[in-house]
Length: 275
Ligand code: FAD
Image 1 (cartoon, rainbow, N blue to C red):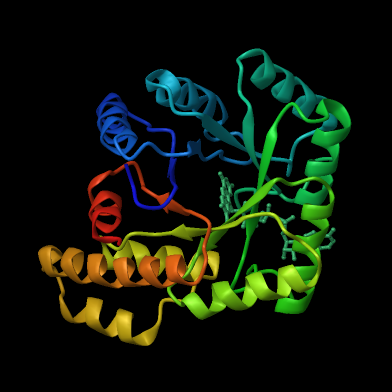
Image 2 (cartoon, rainbow, N blue to C red):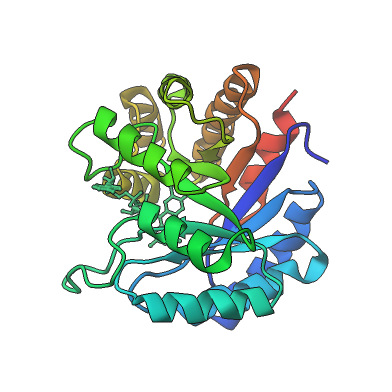
């Protein structure tokens, strides 16, 4: 069992080999007795069935598993049917998002922002689901500034979110500042830091640029210097992320949510280092 409550995010695998790896990762990560697993969802159609299938596969060993659900590009009726289907399958927790449509697909949909989705779920399904929402300690990439993004985050909470999971970050101060600002606005729900283990520099740099997570210069420089030496990248990454998690725990983070990329090893190594 982990020394602090943990949860893990997975994505729907695309191949039989990917499915096999997913189930192995599930079993290894289940040994930490996580609070929940969650499964990403492709807005615009790419992995929607995959999300449900993956949720059903992950929860076979008893861990509460939440599908991510995005409202962009979907009608109220489609969302209602999907939520009804989840309810009938005994799903009790959701990660409710606006989402991003693949480029070229425009905006579409009847609900424009996650706060509207949370409000819709509460209207149609009352307290049937525990609702997690996304939070951005370094500001959402489309937000004009952090103040406005915090105001928008507060709207999602006031609409009925139970808990929030953050975008990943490497600077604990950003998280603590965000939590202080949200608490000052009267919001008391848990804000769970999202943790991205470091295992591959190129992918991490590309992903961080796309989602607006700052990869600090000292980390970037060090990872760059290792070139193809993946053992050194993994060792340095484990040290950096373990220190980050330790700082978060000591600063009062309620739990940790790991972006596993369907792999157990890096998250487990960090969890085992925590005091
Ligand atoms: P919102 O909270 O709606 O915010 C989006 C932007 O609009 C922000 O800039 C915000 O400031 C602004 N805004 C919000 N409300 C209003 C309002 N009422 N009026 C005006 N402006 C407003 N993406 C996926 O496609 N699939 C996934 O499975 C997925 N999982 C994720 C899990 C986590 C924990 C996180 C942090 C992100 C995830 N994402 C996922 C990415 C997410 O979909 C994108 O970041 C998306 O651009 C925003 O979604 P949101 O729910 O945060 O949107």
